[in-house]
Figure 1: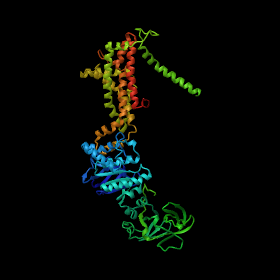
Figure 2: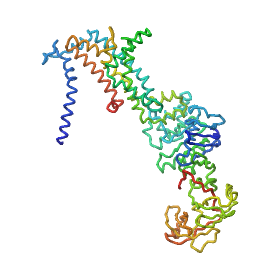
Figure 3: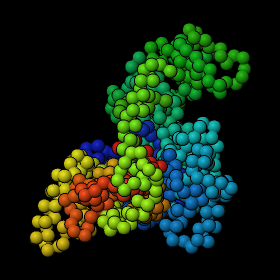
Figure 4: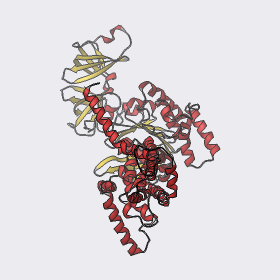
Length: 373
Length: 266
């Protein structure tokens, strides 16, 4: 296993920039998830690392070795395909043995390694089955064993869980994560599923329209999204459009004057520096807003509104509240089981309140591939 | 059962009978005991099958047909498999035309193709002094032209819907292009290739019209040996040798159908 470095990697098809200026260093043993909507360039990036898509410009290094111009079969990456791509005419054990045979290892070594790899994915007694005789989850594990057994410099996972049903998916993602950690595998995983990404990653790379939007840990992305796209794609967010009127004060299009903590946001390079009047959005996470009766809060930001709609989602209860300014926000309240939790019914007048540090000021940019989550 | 359905079955039965009748008659005839074909036969015998062996033309013709068939089949595969791969996988200028070109031998009448190839071989022989006309290589070259359309069709049919990610998987595991083809692609399209081989052989083995122009003294194929024999006499030997030819072709086609359903591609 080794470090993976991508240096200003770009892929262009004619006028279309599939991936633009992608730079990232993945440390030995780290699991990095490329997250983004379909068409954002994440799969193209993975395929460039594997060597199936030639780069237009930039360099790719695996363990210090420049592989940019090497064909796929000489890169020593282990790719788990979305549809597994098992060889249908070979048994599970023969599938796993394939890469070792390509490396011209002696038969005895191949047998021993295949045995160990199958054991690792708990398929040691199904080695002589053909892929079509295995369940989806078992096929997935064969694909994983096949990729791991060659001791690749990089493990590449292309939407590895998307073909599994929901229950199996959670099991397998824990399994893959544990295996990845125990074996210290440098791993790049591609997914469009934010839950999967958040659950598995050491670090995430959020992509849109071929470009990196932000690189960081789950906490970085959630607490300090760099732009509106990231804030909307990772977790749920309310956006209020408007502009800055003075440092720490935001005025929404609906006419609300709201306070935010201009100093607290580390990536808040846009907040105070730009002239007043620049288009901005105030991002508010729904679970950090509080609903209260018209008189019971004394927070900095306190806006009157009417509950329009409620959803009982199990762990949380979601309220859609129309603010006095006409803007709508979602508020998530934890479901503590107490009788008062669904206290607010549609049509009731409430106050939404939050402390200054909840609000994040972001550029109000419009992405073509804006995801609504 | 409705009247319409009965009518359909009767019509189908009649058509099938019409097609099979000559085959049945020929097969039946080959066992007649009399030297001259008479109805009803005075008895049955197997001696005509032995008599085939006394006819050098039939034996030599059979051997030649076999040789030509096998070589034309092999050459058809060597050319047809890569051609099918190119046609099904790559977009390039002239792709459609190439596909059509490879299928044209199907629509050119055998007599026309035979004449053209004969003239071509004569001219080539004059220019290069290579003995092509009425030689085994000459026959094989001509027969490749008629086996290729079938090879391409059958192999291309098996490449449709081929999941190419398994090839990427092989490359990812360290297999170069050739190894990927040999270890992954070829085994997966094997049914189509086997079918193409068998059917190519059948097409070559049974060809008469085109081959008529390309044989020479001492080198005849079986269908032509039969035709030549027929010019002089009609006796049950001809029926016996025809039956053998039908059996060879029939066996090859039944075997083919096990790999690729012929109804899908013919």
